[in-house]
Length: 330
Image 1 (cartoon, rainbow, N blue to C red):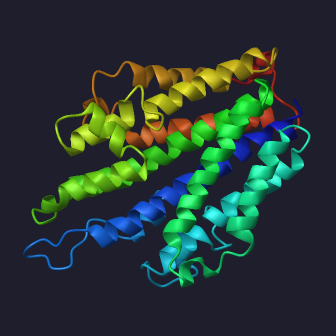
Image 2 (tube, rainbow, N blue to C red):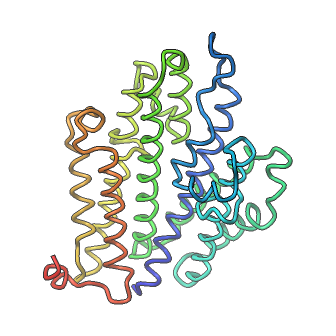
Image 3 (tube, rainbow, N blue to C red):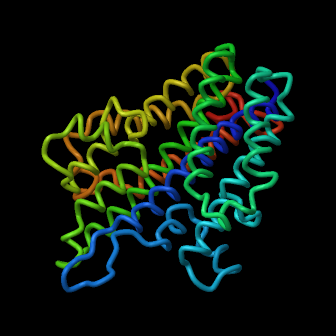
């Protein structure tokens, strides 16, 4: 497969997944603010605020160039529609459509039609979304569009390199998002004051819902919404599709398929994903990450970034590195 085509379909998967993740974060935070309980002695305190969403999406610096305050007007607009935010829902879907347009001969007609309809509905004329208080509907539409797109892809794409590159992009983006969300929310949990401890339940619910994990967690755990249990579920649950462990395992299986279909090409990306997957597979419990920090949340995130860079260097450059060249360079 040509490196340009491989890169486009890889980023198609990442952008559609990113739009879904951003939509879920935004929608859950919006409802968490409205539903937050009032705590005696802390009138008006809420469990979630808007600024952490900028940290999770790594867009705080760019946001400050356009807005003075992170509030209920500026952050939703920045994350949903702002064209200068490359991670906004609108930008992610626009990039996804552009990648799909260049791949018309490599994806199914149904995939193109789905992403094109989504673009026309959510990107072309969406400015009235916040003005008419339709943020929830907009986020739900973006989330469901992602589900539809990946469902169509699974049903219509041959299991060839294109399919596996898109899947690699999807699950790498998913693991990255779960980790970033946990890093911000876990830090806020550790730093909570005696007053905010009273809203721990609401915090846990918001965290799980932001990763579509609330119902799955309740079915698997009978110890309430203890922060340690929530974090362990989102990091190490082997059967939940959005846990870090599950996502990294699927990523490794996908890169193994890519390597098997690319004889003579370096397998460094597969080796790195396999090592990270093995680390998560054989941890005794979540304390190895949260207390011993071997590996740390930051270390896992850096490992994912390294896998992404390795994929780009090996498969997406104009002259892919062969196995023998990789061994010489190492």
